[in-house]
Every structure is written in structure tokens, then in C-alpha cells.
Length: 530
Image: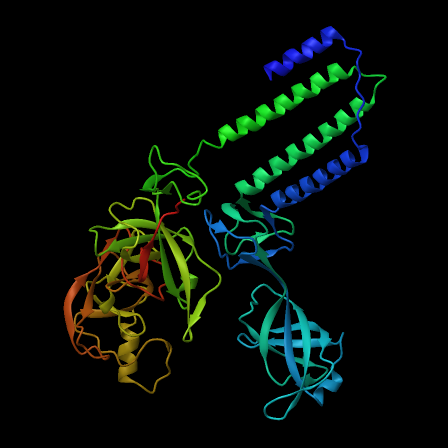
């Protein structure tokens, strides 16, 4: 570039009047510019394909990739579905189908809930279909507005103009899009999670491809060179207004600047930067090794982000409604002593059905994981509800109808039903004023029967919301006693409870202290790596 700069200065000083004519075919030069521009547009389009956008608005489901994955063009990334409208394709007997027409109003019944929705017939098959039972059926498609709870797992039936369909069917989403990669590379960012709502045209992911970026840079340089050649051609043909020696020197200087930039870009390619912050766990190269086309695809090293670990656990469909992101979890492992605290970071909306049982795979993140290693088997206990500073009594103090026996020390209780029970035992035919109080309970001597309001419970204790005080003493049932409470254990002193009650409660309990969902088991997931 320095030499070109000096040549330009010399040309200006010399002010040469010699002009050489140019026999280059101007049309050929223009075609080269057009071809270079087309290549640049193609490269720009490929570059833009790195940014994945949605064509429709709706809810994200079935994400098949994660950040850091190697992506191939055509690979499925996620699914978007618009559940604002649903459609139901149901069969009608050939005779009943004569009263069904496109545009007719339809009364749709949701099978599971019995809810009735109103929709419109939008399609009707042109010819009947014969079934294995030799019935002739005509299919009609009905569209209804989703009240907010319908999914593709729900079934429904329909009545049109008094004609009922021959069988129920599953609801379907009207508008669904499968997001696929148009470019190959590394998934640099994924800006969506399962259950997210997106709008049409929103960018949801970025696939980084050094090859595509390099191709765009080269296309820009090629286009600049083609334009530069065209300028040279114009300058060389302009024998009257331009000093060709000066202009040639100027163009040479521009070429030198371009070549310098290309050389600097090539030098920059020899600097390899870590794509993520983490710990090197595998090293495949050392100082002095040769890197060429024979080993260009081999990773120099593998880096793990060890800032946290995650667990993937399967939760049964009967319990998934209790699990929410942000809930705390206690992690234990046979291979490592102690407990570790985790947090639920992912609760999917789609489950997996195996042999008639549906489970949902949740994720729990552990930041302070101590000696835990990827691949270890662990148990997790998720806190779904908890209550602090509540009164508790042993679970086996509770009789049928939420009745407990309280030591008769003269204290008055608003829920005292002793007299009512005794009266009903003595006069079983008399009118019953308290139908929810059992009549065949035998009250031990020296105790009063008190009806209480209970809350959350675990395996050992149950929360008392009202009916008792801290100083009351209750009788606990012997675990071998019958439903008539024939035997009693030692009296138990009721006490206040700070903090959470820990246990394997799976269902039930209104509110209370630290009740933990029964321990699910799973394996430690590995950290993200590059």
C-alpha cells in the first residue's frame, strides 16, 4: 500500500498526458458486475436465513434443539400452533349428511367436560366413505372458537340441523407451523421456551455459520472488484477528462487497500476464541500440531459450562399440575452424601404416552452441586406447598369427620360436639342437627369430642386451621385400632410448628408447611459444551 501511495504521488507530479485506449469489452465488464451482484444477493439471502422467524403467531411447543447444537439445513427446530380456533372433522351417516351443508351452524359438545360450543361447517366431503361395517359415512369439518382450554388431546361430537354425528373425533389446530432451519451452523441463541406466545414475523433463534458469513464477505469483495473493474474501464475510455496515469495510480492504491484488508482478515482467522466461558475437559491438540484439511473438522478442545447442572425427571400426569417453574427441590444421590438445593426451570406442555400412561419431563437446575457429576443417579423432592408457624397434631389423632379427642380441662371449644354425639347415641331416632358428625364414635372418659378444620398434611402431622389451641392435649389413635377407635395410644401434646413439614404427600392438603411432592428419580444431565 505504501508503494501504491508513492506511485500515486509520482503520477500527480508527472501529470502525464499519455492516455492509453482500452479495448476491453464494456458489455462483458457490465455482465461481470451483474453476475457479482446476483451472487451478493444470494449470499445475503443465505446470511439472512441464519435468523429464524415465525410466519404465524401462536404458542411454541415441541422444541427439538437447544443452544450450542449443530444445526443442518432442513432440521426441525420447534412447532408453533395457533389455538385461538379449533376444527373438528366428524362423520355423519349418509342419510343424516343430507341435512348438513357448508355454512351451517353446528352445536359442538366437548366429550370430557360436556361443555357446548357453537361453530360453523366449513368443509364437507364430496362422496360418502364405506366402513368395515358397511356403513356409508360423510365427513364434515366444523370450526369453533377456542374458549382457552381446548387442546388437540380433547375429543368432541357435533349436531348440525338436528343431525348428530356418527362418532366423536379429536380437535385439531387450524394453523400450525413447523420451524425448520434454512441454514447450517451452530445454534447461537434460542429466544423461545415451550409454552411461549410469539407473533407473526418474530425472530426466535439465530444459527451462526462462519461459512455463510465468509461467503457474504467474499461476495461483497467480488462485487467491489467487479465495480472497480467497471470504473477502470470507464476511466480508460475517458481520454478527454481524466488523467489516466493519476487515476490508475488511484485505483492501484484502492486495490492495495482491499488486498491489505483481505490479508488482515486472513490473519484474524488464525485466532481461535472460546465460544463459551467454562472449563476445558478435553484437549485434542497441542503446540506444534499441524492443522489442515485432513483434521479441520476435529475439535481443538471441549469446554463445559460447569456453573450449574440439570436433572431431567418424568412426572406423572396426575401430578404435573402441581409442578411450576421456580419451585424449590431437594436433591439426594446415593453416590454423594448430603442434600443439594435445586429449582424447577422447565415444565413442558406436551407429555409422552407410554402404554397408556402419560408423563411429562421437567428440568431442575442445581447451581451449588458440590461433588455431583453428570450421569449420577439422583432423587428429587419438589416443594409444591408449604406453611410456616402453623399448629400441628399427629395424623393418627384425627377420627372420622375431622373429630379429635381433647383432654377435658374445662376449656370451651367452638367445635365441641360431645353432647351431640352422646345425644344421638342415646336417641338414634331423634332428628339429626349435625349430619356431618358421626354418631357411632365412642368418646373416651375424661375427653371431649371437638370438630376441627384441617389443612396441609404429610406422613406424620396435619395442620390445624381452627378448633384447637396450643395448650390443648389430644389423644392419638393406636395404629392397630379399628375404625370405631377401640384402642388409643398415649396422649399427644399439640405444638406450634416453625418451617415446613417434609414428607411424601402426593395429593390433598389445602395449605400448609413445606409439603413436598413425592421423590421423583432421574439422572444428572451433562452441562452444555462446545
